[in-house]
Each structure stands twice: as C-alpha cells, then as structure tokens.
Length: 135
Image (spheres, rainbow, N blue to C red):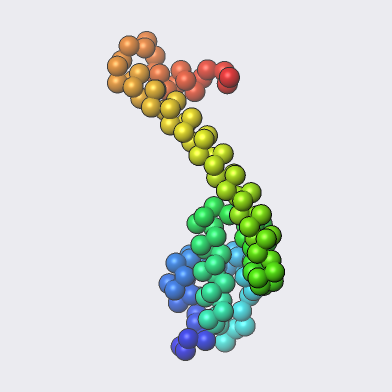
C-alpha cells in the first residue's frame, strides 16, 4: 500500500490509536469515514494527521466535544487562536481542580494505609473511612 492508501491496521500503528477507537471516532463523526478499496477502508496522510491530533488532545485530557471544537478551530487557522486559547485555559482550570481533588484523595488514602499499618483501629480503617458520612 502506498502512503496515501493505508488500511486501518496501518493507521492504528502510525497513530498509536486502537482500531476500535478509530471506528468509534468515525461513527461519532470526529474523523471522516474514508473511501473504501474493495472491502477495506483506505486512509491517507491527512487521516494520519487528524487522528494523531485527536489522540494527543485526548492524552491531554480534552473531552470529545472539546476535541471536536479544537478540530473546527484548527480549520480556521491563525484567526481562531484566541478561541483555542480560551478553550485551553478552561481545560487547564479543570485539570488544576482535578489535581486538588487527587491530592485530597491521596491524603485520605495515605492516612488509611498508615492506620492499617499501625493496626490500632478495631476495624479496617479504609472501610471505616469509606463508610463515614461525607463532610
């Protein structure tokens, strides 16, 4: 196959994206369904680029709707940079909020593990922590 006629397995290898994920992205319209050569989908270099973009955005934690917005903004060129910045800034705020939540979870879990190691509680400290009312 030439560089402009890739089957889905080769697209998967080049982008690091699972085949079922590629099919899912096609179903939801995140990437276009390619033309077929016989029974096989036939992808090109543009598909490799778009799917790589999607995969990297997902690795950074962008939700599918945000990825879709970024793809649309990317098509707008330099004029869309301010909108991309706003979307990234909102996402950064979400990431920072999750980091704070994760740090709180780490503290609770670490305290529970320490309590288990000390063996001073009559029950299981982690079970007791999970059973306690939120507050």
